[in-house]
Image 1 (cartoon, helix red, strand yellow):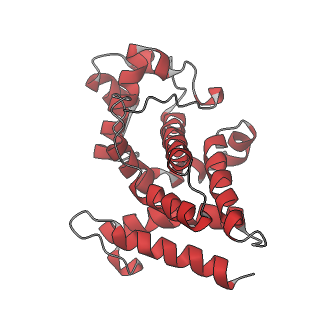
Image 2: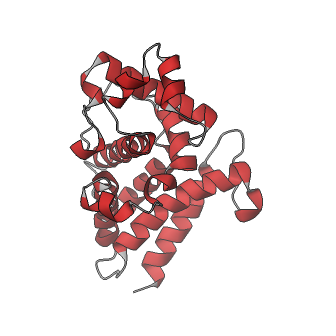
Image 3: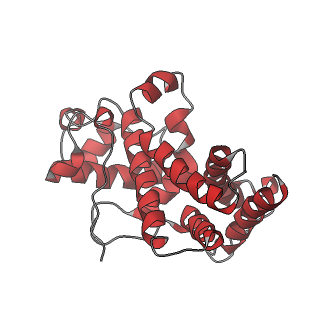
Length: 226
């Protein structure tokens, strides 16, 4: 069992939900409800009913559901970064590191029992289907200035550093890093809901086909484009 502390930008919350029993309950059941209902139909009123509390109590932690969504996906981005750093810690070969990265991007839904109030599998589903709504907004520039997307940028930086270990002359490491993250999410979503938009398939829950796609895209870019 690995115990970790997820650190997020303090601008994302009024009070850190990780510090109280009610806050952890808000996180736990917001994940369950958003995954079940979708972000559009999710409301603080429904969440309050689910946790047998009041909307006012939720507003003591988050200003609105948009910032709650950013909090959740930021938590997951930080969780992915932790897994990458942990699993590549003693790896020397850069190619092997990148393959681990790609596996994490696809399969970071592995549950950590040390964080019982977060179902990483359900949160992974939210990231796949809802994460773009966190930053495809009219307020993205101000939110970026306020540090809302620090965890996403740190994740991309972590991946881009490994990319440069493979090809130090590669001109687009950050673009490739963010593209790989989005490609993983998009193709999982497409395979499940819009199969004509992808060539990969999810068979009996296996995401191996998507990992092969990411490896093809990543290593082809790094080997061919100088």
